[in-house]
Image (cartoon, rainbow, N blue to C red; front, side, top):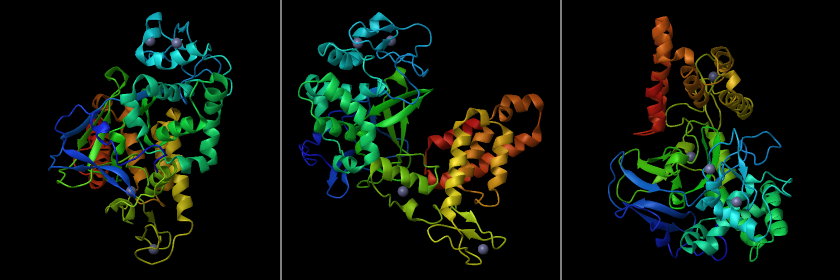
Length: 436
Ligand SMILES: [Zn+2]
Ligand SMILES: [Zn+2]
Ligand SMILES: [Zn+2]
Ligand SMILES: [Zn+2]
């Protein structure tokens, strides 16, 4: 879990120094199997602010941003993250994309710029193997090592799972062009493959990719990254955008007792369990055994269940998928859920499908196979209610009472399910009220 040169039990206070909160209601603990985690040191009230943390490192990531004009992706300023739709300039020292000359000297851009300038190279040259924005994050992390050792220390103490990542062919393939460029082309002194792969592994485990209105950012908040995962957690996280410095707030969603472990949900709690577990295994390398994952009925919601095809009211639930009425076993249940999940994800990400016809088609298609409270239905129905034709203004204008009633019914049903999964205060619930 931890790489060499990192004693996980020592120097935990270097994380605490990152926090503004002098009287934090938690302590950092260590467990041989689980690694580090946070535990409440007093009773905590629902809604209480537990952590407010600025990112140690932030950088643009690809899949939305492209440096240079070649692939038509959107470009951003490496100093202030402004989208560069109109004009832009190349940094005279490194060739990076900037909105104006003043951003050349921004502290964040200097982190990568100084490496390029020292090695007498430019960002845009010789980078045809990869999207150059992918270099920004590792270079910014590397720059901490010499220039800000007080920040490098807690970063280096984060879990890396480096040995497991090195065995993962796909992960290694993804890192190869970055390593090749930094090691063989930039030839930065004192940077070894071992060091670079450890940095990239620490980022893979602890970093988060967030989408702020189309701008994808990779953020590392070291203290918050020590918090354990639970699919029905006792805290919620709130990310703030670029203009607010991308800080992260973590608040208690329910009352937490002294001695309880503090938890957040690393991924969307409204994903079907199999998909959440797959993401946790792939990205965080662990099998989630939380109370919710172990409950076949998804905390009493039937959020992962299917409707029996052999009898009228039967329900098939994981892991054995046996009907609760006629006891018949469902054929290929995971294939059904996987197909429904993939189609739901397409529907939720493809803007051309955000209309009542396509959404209605999905709901109709799966109404005989997914339980009405299935997590995918909750997500898709929320999308339906957020369509412009379901907006309050539009409905007031058209005086379409039937539609209004339909929307209120859907949102109430959704809320009843979400209440069971996201205990206490939750931004997802807040969103439901806003849509209402
Ligand atoms: Zn700028
Ligand atoms: Zn520069
Ligand atoms: Zn879980
Ligand atoms: Zn049945």
